[in-house]
Length: 575
Image (cartoon, rainbow, N blue to C red):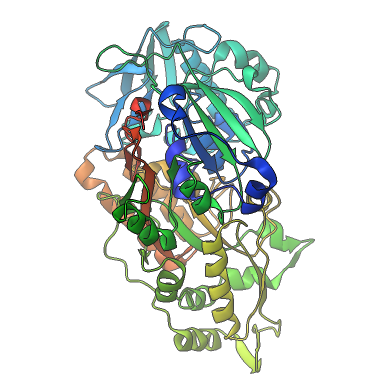
């Protein structure tokens, strides 16, 4: 529902499963270094799938920007990926009032910004002010807005923050995993009205002042990002030793997945997320002692991979004239027919080599509390889909041509991001099946940043296959669920709910967040999943079984389905 949380950047490398292209390797762009330098230099080599769109954590809406800034900034709290419970970050401890309407955070005294200035309560207050500023577009604000009100906060001293809530708010500790910004650097910029243009990808790395485990040292667009360890980082190990143990990280930026396997086999990437067709060969290489690596299943994807049709009238209604596509894409009969044309069994077999399962809800089964197990899937049934279209007035007028009730030929554009063979194959399967109904589908994959611009800026799209990350706390998906959310992909930023069912979801979000008894909260989110399942703003596909692979010389690398556990403890042992 949002960019990945801090500290998951390395795990994001795994789940994206990316690599440098074979062309680049052959052209001399490979990293030439013996394996034995790991124990000496303690540099971790990874990769990401695309360039970032920003280095400003408040403005992030894409996963790559979140991955590349995740180790630069600290949050008040962090989520333990093993227990899934909040634990200390910049806040050493916190006290919740008996009425659940205020919470006091006690900040640690040893956290510093990269320029040596202390991290204080003023930084927390400033960060909240920026998030709540309507002139600063961000995906965080919906998740910490309670009854249409902001959280009021005060700082009685430099290391204490007291937050006052309009009413009890159950998701609070999960929603406050917000990266804190340096007020002494950015507050003047914000007051001058320039925050939205600060820390873009053209910013010199030394100008990005964080407080995290690593400092960005170099960014070369479409090439590489280099990080050095923050020697003043507050965290220590159980013996008082400096953390993080790694001295740095080298992240290659690539968009082509095809050479990932070769790069990993050659030792140029230290951790890798094998595609489904690579899992078995890697396991064989381990059994045959060809590679000194680990291959481990970490769980089912916690995110959601779905098709969605554009329902945005701001795109389809021009000068009082409505494009007929808007009528199709908001017609439940049309959408139900499309849902019955997603051949999940073939996708699982042909695309994911049996290492996936059918997805029915936007919340993953890995979320043991909030996943709704009672939803019935839309079975693949072309005949039923054709009958539904006919009943809705979408008639097959001749072989290969179907029209709507007004005689307009059914035709739409389909897109996804380039660089993902799996998504490309899924779109190809869907296109072929839909065209068998007499609907013309123009498939045009787009470079990721171009696709994101269409989704959140120009709104110029018809149907998209896209994936959103998922979280433990469903309220953190407010920017996706709520009608006013900027990631409410099919019709974002609505001033008022466009439909009764979207208004009902808004109400359920408020009610679910107000229920403090964890045993009573799931029904609200189960109902939201039911509404999305019935109204089909998103058409679920499948969830991949996620695997991680890494060199055995990398110790304390502990990937979990919800993130990396104790990533600061990672280090290389002697080969």
